[in-house]
Length: 146
Image 1 (cartoon, rainbow, N blue to C red):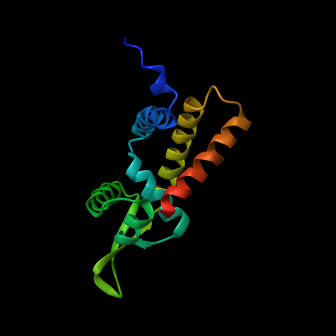
Image 2: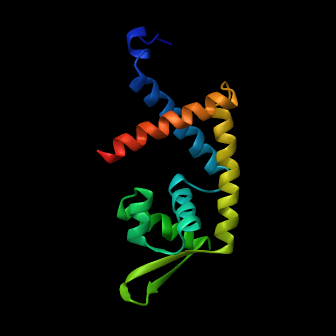
């Protein structure tokens, strides 16, 4: 295995990118253990937090492309985790709602994601985890406003 230049490893952008790749793999593996994907989590979590929504609203809330939203909702509906019905105010639009089975799946996914967080952040004590989360949240908020 080749060594990475110290000049590169001292750059936060490189470190964040490398850690993001690792975090994504861990999350994908964790979700896979409960028969799910990251897009499923985004949609179920948004429905749980905000209630019923149109597919377009879910796409905006979850930062997902329209085609990815449709594919994920098709999968979730096929498993009975969401119900999709025509919007009574606009029949061209679908309204998506979380089912009881979807709530249960979200809880399973939350437990899987909690394990991922523990694995990813294992070397850090609780205080450092909170500090890291606070700093990452501040950075993300800054760049989302741009």
